[in-house]
Image (tube, rainbow, N blue to C red):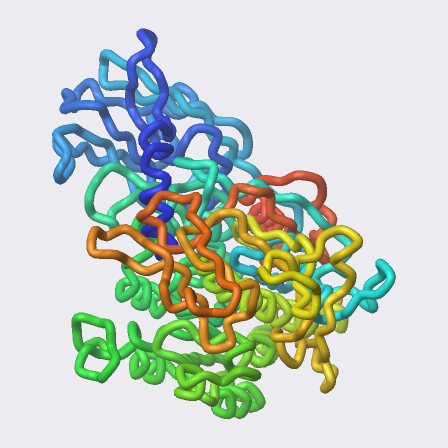
Amino acid sequence: MTAKTLRHLLTAACAAAALSTGLSAGGAAAQTVYPIDRADLLVGQKFDLKVEFAGVVDPAKAKVTIDGKDHAAVLGKAATFIEKEEGVNASALLLRDVALNMPGRHTVTATDGSSTATVTWTVYATGPRKAKNVVILIGDGLSVGHRTAARIMSKGIKEGKYFGKLAIDDMPHMALLGTSGVDSIVTDSANSAHAYTTGHKSSVNALGVYADRTRNSLDDPKVEIISEIVKRKLNMAVGIVSDAELQDATPASMAAHTRRRADKAEIAEMLYALKPEVLMGGGSAYFLPQSVAGSKRKDEKNLVEMFKADGYKVATTAADMTAAARDPKTTRLFGVYHPSNMDGHLDRAILKPDYARKYPNQPDLPEMAKAALDVLSRNPNGFVLMIEAGLIDKYSHPLDWERAVYDTIMLDKTTEVVKEFASRRGDTLVIVTPDHTHAISVVGTVDDNAKGEEMREKVGVYEKAGYPNYVDADRDGYPDSPDVSKRLYVTIGDYPDHYETWRPKMEGTFVPAVKDKDGNYVANEAYKSVPGAVFVAGNLPREASDGVHAADDALLTAMGPGSEQIHGFMENVDVFKVMANALGLGARSPRKQP
């Protein structure tokens, strides 16, 4: 639902966006140039140059210059002229796989003879390498409200003071991040993860590309991804770990070049083509041939067997993974533990509904992180590892905040594992960040024993909120149950029609709205009979089945070499710069290790 609904909601904003189009002298729209205006490019980072003209133009008059020189002289080869792009009655110039090695500000001018567009690019170098390794942990949709609720439920609080900090709190550097994209103030997980892995802003649904005007989702102008750069320049290892499908937006951003995040079969092949040393998560349905039950491929490619043939240890259970990671000979590990998204902590470890019992041997995220670090640290050239807690977002969309907070705690425990690794070595940059936010807030408590006939009368705010009575008898950091007599009252600010029950959904993930015969989403009657349930009219368009992302700033924390660059307010693309600087990817001698 996420991307589809978001796309509908953003249509108006997308239409209004000017992308990178410059203006002609007369004020009319001229050419669109990719990379876009004000793009920042790492020295030597590969990209595709594309100019989209407004109509069919004379090839003799179509020109692109960089700093007043013909682009071919600067980039080493000439762009291909396309008289009419497929499905578009207009011309274009396209030049793939080029790079700029001159730091500084560069002016790019494109003309068709009658109108001219000008954009500027900033090419930046870096200092020498400071870090051997980089680990970026992404809490998908992680917001301040998730963190606050996780701290209360995991650490406890009394008389205004917590009994401990989260691992993600206790890091020396912190910044607010802007997550908006080229086409909208509100981003999706593809576009936002792309910003981290490429250093470029793009559009909703886009991964490793700028979204151009053609229909083909696989022909858009590309930008090189950090995983490709570190393999090409430094022969480093790459790890990708997620509890969502590995073809989902965030893990895909480490390998994919597509305008359409839903190209999951193609993304699975792009992951294989990248050959990360560690690849673990859900989504086996896109790695298996169509003849296998449950496959979602439309061909007979068996990517599991292809990984195996390339020397990967293949794991399908937690036990397989642990055994493979412990073997000192394992330098390549491919683990898939669920056909789709893996199950979250509350379902997998505590409630164990039927759908979670179906896959009882899934590892949790801290275990996958530990295995990934064991395998990747065998590469003498260092590694870049992305770890995603993808289910925080997937539970926040359907307003199931309890499941989202349990997985926030799991992200925190994963951070503990990574911090311990990094503290022991002193050569690893660790970044913990959301990709975007949700409008989630902790506003009080719900006390079943409070006076009142209606559930809303049992909501306590200010001094009536007091403190919840969650119990963690086994002291594992997770409340034994979310269903206690006095619990947090957490709200999500955007929603479809639904029934508010003021209770955790112990029977399974909340499904707030369902489609009616007209295609609109209406409140799910399954919750109408819950004692005290109240109908809540939605505040989103009726085509929205769930809550949506927010444009609120994201909160990033970091430690390790290079983390001193994290401070104040930053754009999400600056996270790429921090990683590039730490690894010296734009240095004169990038191979030198700290």
